[in-house]
Length: 311
Image 1 (cartoon, helix red, strand yellow):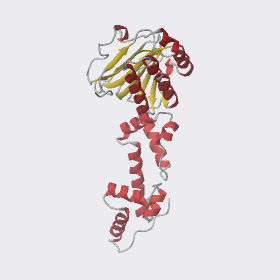
Image 2 (tube, helix red, strand yellow):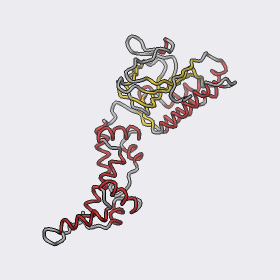
Image 3 (cartoon, one colour):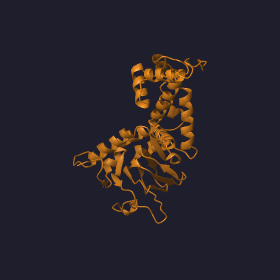
Image 4 (tube, one colour):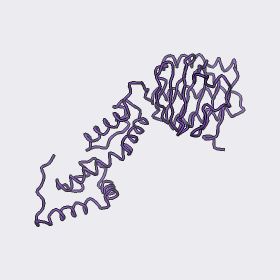
C-alpha cells in the first residue's frame, strides 16, 4: 500500500506515561482532498470540524503540512493569506483559525496534534500565532518525518506513542531553522520576480545562488520559485540561462569575443556546457552561429561590420 497517498488518521486517548514524556501526540494523519470536494472531510470527530462561522478553536497545538495544492488561511492573529504547497500551519490552543484548500486544486496534507510540558515550552519560546504560516525550504524532509511518525502510529509496539512523539521536536526544529515566516507585509509575487530579475541581470557574469538570492529577498526558496514561475512563466534557472544566452549573442557578434571568452564572461563552468546550451537554444553551435552572422553582415558591402566598443 502507498503510505504517502491513502487517507489515514489516529485519535489517541490520554495516557499518563505519554503525558509525563513532555511530548504527547493527541491525533495525527494524512488526507488527500480532491479538487472541488467539501472541506474538512467529515470522518473526523466533531470537535475537530469547523463551526457554522467557519472557525475552529482547539485545545492543542497542531502542525498542518500542505504537501501539494493551494488554499487560504486566517486566524485571530493573522489576516487571511494564501497557502502554497510546501507550507506549514502552526496552530495554537485557544486561537481561532480557519483554513481550506482552493476548490480548483484541492490539496494533500499531513497533520499532528500534540501537547505536553516540553511542547508548550518550545512553542511558546520559539514560535507565536502572529507567524502561524511558514513556507518550508526543505519540504521533502518534513514530509519524510511525517511519514515516519505515521508509520509508528500504525505499529502495535510498546512505547509506540513516545517514539512517534519524538518526531515532533524534529519537525519544529526544521520549521525553525529551514523556513521563512510569512507576514502580511511580505513582498508580492510581482515584486519578488522583478527584484530577482534585476539581481540576475546585474550578476550575469556568475551563476546565481538561487537559495542565497531568496534569503536576500527575505523569503523562502519554495515561495521564491513559485512567485518567479507565476510571474515570468519560467523557473529562475531557466530565466537566467535565457538572459545569459541572449547576452552571448551580443558578445559573439558585436564584440567579437571567442567562444571560450564568452563562456568565461557569462560564468559558465565550461566551454562544453556553454556550447551545448547555446546549440539547444538556437539550433547552432556558438562558433557556427557567429561565423554565419559575420558572413551575413559582411555580404552587402564585402566588409565586416564595424567593431562596437566594449561595454
